[in-house]
Image (tube, rainbow, N blue to C red; front, side):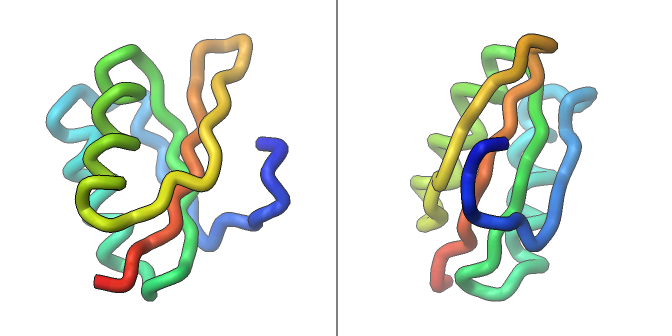
Length: 82
């Protein structure tokens, strides 16, 4: 992760399938205070497409998204105000 923002928490959902990928992400975001960050490790096209889009639609910010050579993507989210 090359972002200068340090994540407050991390979540590994690389072995989860949709819709559990966002369910677990949503639950982790709910445990954070507004403005805190969550680094999500995910794998696969469907979670890569759905998790960032759903997080944004629920008022959270996507700060960074990178994918490593191993196929694991790293998604940095900031919890929204609500």
